[in-house]
Length: 344
Image 1: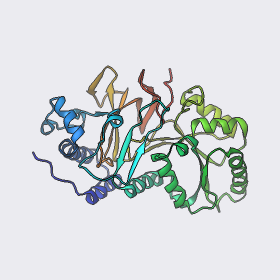
Image 2: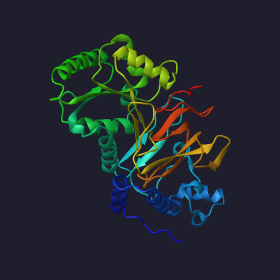
Image 3: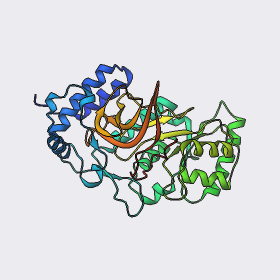
């Protein structure tokens, strides 16, 4: 069976339609179509499959697909077909670490996809002020997170939305003013989102604790070597106490993916219908099962049409009724931007 070339515009519509009219067998059918396509036209993935002696035409289930190790993004240019990238996203990490690179063919598609995911969970961006505390990402440049949040900030059409680098005192003042205004005009004004990387939110909590009970706080990323790594629960407890909020929201995203997941009232992440989480055995990278409750996360992101949609991460996960939880990382793997340490 020779895979047909995929029309990128038709593919976008297909995955967006998947989110509106979702059927499990529809996802599998579309995922297998993309798998066979990338197994032929993605040179690195194709070579990987050949080393494993896997014939794509004999794979008939998403649980039979060999997922590409995420570290390949550090050492290879992972693209389906060759093209001149409009943007190259790079992962976070320490100075000595090799960064992953994601070569982007259409930046608008990334932004529109991210917008649809966010708005499906939180509502229209125009209904928010977004204050972003992402210093390590801003300093590094080429961050997919900064690109996405910058796009979101512009879509809010708010003079109050913006990035904060080292001026957390001004951020604290802005939050206080907006919170008071929100409290006085609860039904008339925009909602407020504080979107921050973990270590920066902890610094804000330590220096400027204040009542932010009506503000949505979304944490993302880890400590970036700026302090002791915390479990997600420990981080959330500190932030909830400092800001008098009932819960802390989280974003699950990474350089290698064009889609995101969000956790709102709990630590359970919701994902769009075109992103599926599968679990593999800790001691067998090819043992993937729908019955596993805990294991290492494999991701199918159908938005990754121009790179690779089938990625084996190093995140430890647990399946839940309406999503999944991050419970840590595989031993000896590098601390990446989107995760905290394992909870025992």
